Image (cartoon, rainbow, N blue to C red; front, side):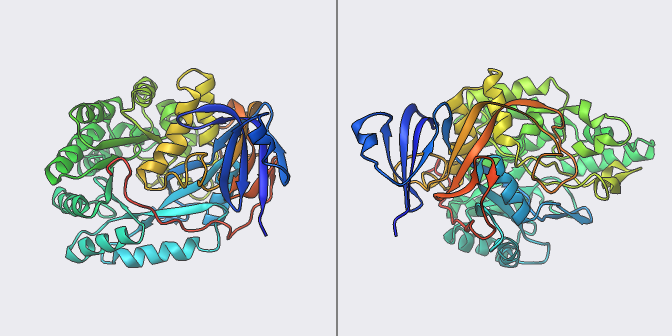
Length: 467
């Protein structure tokens, strides 16, 4: 039996167009668009009709950087795939790309299988995986080829966290060389972790234990240095590079320089770097621990460079790096020693709204909002045009968005499984009203109608900016 839905009267916004159009959904896909009020639109006929008059009709968000159920620092991220994907849907995101982890001494396959087991049957929205490569060796390099073939086409490495995820320059170069051959994309956590560890040790020895010192030891210059080094290694390998969670203006400058030289180098930032700062890390009574993440929050003056990078396309994507730890019992592990605070912030539910606020505030245009939150991550990670746009043949991942509704962000009302909001008390304009995932209602007029297990694993092609 065919299922048919018509979304009528809304302003359809994609990365390239804005048009008052009706959208026909059939059997989980976008079947057609037609200008509202025209005979073509009237011909869509019967079925479930959703009135979007006065609202935006936008593609579901694609969050290319999440960590559900991630073990870190002696604890585990508070959102499961079930709670995290439900919260994502509430925030207008309909696809996440999470990170499977290779343990040192283990294989990529073991890591990927473990993450499949966590996610399968539990997700409210569609999901895909990147692979964290923690142990580069001959077998790992061969496995990278196999993963690309099965739709896991990006590999993350760390210049930070010695003893946990860290790869040295030789290991990074080998992985990049392999990616250059198999079409994979290397994602880089670019911070000089060896130098940072020295600064951590020295700060603690001086008795500097409060959360704000987390930001002071993870210096912007060490993010810029690692970004520069990653770019040069990628250049030597002839490989593309995607730098995750860029937070410092000096790192943006490195990316801009590389892109101006014609290199296939891409950059992502996150809402926390656009809206929060070291002022939050310095909040009294250990409240600053809520804002400990890596790369760290920077002084407020860095925000202008990030917004500019998003406008000039030196930064292409805004993802969340959603990795929530409760303040009570998790963040508190670092009382008396900032280096023991689990690194990570909640945000998967807030991204689309915060970026709409950026439209309201004049930082970006409406189409750029959709580009950095939906279309570009879908292209970057080989999901477009199945995801990230509203066009015939695309999955019917569609959000009806009320651009005038006002809300106050709060842990009292959010759906993430974490006991605080990084944006507590922040007033924003714009709110998700209705969400379709592959044509199924997940959020219906601010009521959750989704279910665990609807979300499907989605294999990816290689980065579409390189094809």
